Length: 325
Image (cartoon, rainbow, N blue to C red):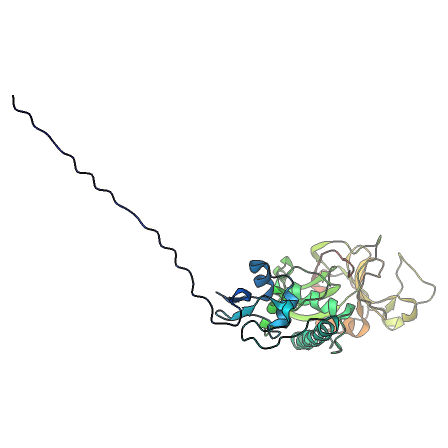
């Protein structure tokens, strides 16, 4: 009996995985330097590299608003060295940081004046003082740029500061307000009022909305329904809900009020702080109210009107005020 033997050949395939390690950076201290893969900010670099304070990174790396793709970044800001070339770096003591922050605030104020100059807003003092008026304007810029709205300081090295300095013009805020032919957008967080037509902003004015217990009520395209030019008293109308003894501007009466919700109106006043101080209305400076009324075509009105089509403007009210920390 014949016997047949079959031999099976087994082929073994070995797969080798190779990991490519980036070449060490040609810098003074490679452990303290990273290369930005994409355009970024110091805030993002700090998060990605657990590098601490974005302001310290901003100071250590030449105080740039943003980082270009491919740029080298020193991520060890506290050692008083430029870890890219080994030269001495800034000492980040309190005096150095305070001076740099003040200079940065001046830059912000100048940029804000540039962005708001064509909207009747009025210039900020370029003094390096990050006070409530600067906070109000920063909040308005955040609103227009689609950032989280707050009146807090805008820190160098942050994503939002990079956005501020990257824009050449102030956008119209994204809101249902712009669905109207003519509109007013009152933001209680910022204490700011945007006024425009369609997708175009015409004016941005500081406002003061209702104080606690008398809040300006939220609105979504509420039609203005009453305008009182008070021609017999120089434009000053005495509120029937919160009357005062004598009709005059010193008593805080309503200058040429435009009503949008029961007794709540947009009106001129001689006191328009950057905080909620009214009894529910939205205050504007007297000159700003005159500008607004003229834009509506109501500056020649000789008496009170309740005709909505003559006013032809809607009002949005949004946001919540939070004091500066």
